[in-house]
Length: 360
Image (tube, rainbow, N blue to C red; front, side):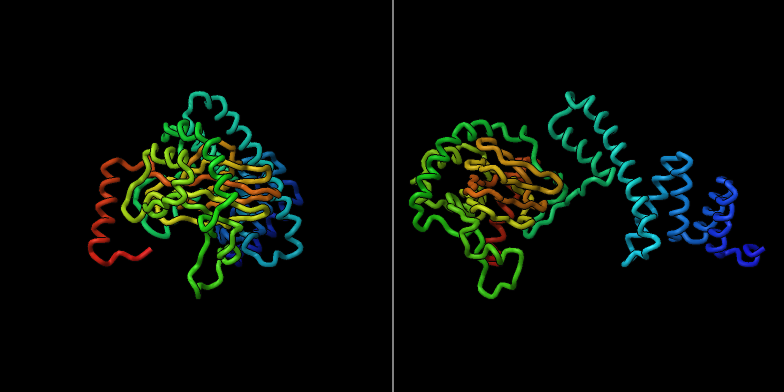
């Protein structure tokens, strides 16, 4: 009678559901909860009761859907009322166990075909499974400068794009020896990587500003050679000359030795353009160092190069007691064609010729 007098009362429908629960009538309890949700899909208590009932009945999929809705709604409460804390905590445990089971099953299914997949197919498949089950975020490009449209927003580039990696990796020992000799007497060659203009407000870079915690020795900078360093590092100079790097007057390439002092972190950040790939050749890597691009974290391995898109959020750390050193240089994004390389060179040349190009 009460419901007929107020058919738009979700509270009355929940009360009816509680009565059917007490009488052990699952179907009618669920029907009453559905009626409450038909009145208001944001009815948190109805979703909780629905999750409990489906879970008790072994309706795993329906329970997962109900508990997921309850947790999403509960996350909007600040603070969560104490009577709901234990109920939502139970739901979180259920959802975590369910997604872990699904993740394990999906990963096993992928493993069964992994041998037939390319590097990029396997990485994309792993990322898809993890993101579909809420276990990782998919990061997008964030360019502080030039954004080239429709390029894949991949975190690490497939090694197969860079067949010349083996050639520069073979020079690791010679390159490392030149770096060590350079560091023994760096003179003016070693400088802070972060140098902010006077008057710049506090930012994530303030702790590294004008400090050698993150130091750099440039061989090339914005397309200009640092001849003093190149002359002292002939093997490194030759190795860099042998790669198909990006050439843009006044802009590319850049190549430098990157030194990260013990217990130093480079904060999460993004780069200026997705038209390039950034290559790391690790030279000195003590234990406790790491590098994250988007949702994937890697450890540097001395002598093993990799390339990544630095317009996807990335960060680095050296938690060891020793110096970490990497040779870093840029090349074209491998998804650009040779015609697009020329298009970009002409774009920058025309911008410079107009007189309106923004100074670096």
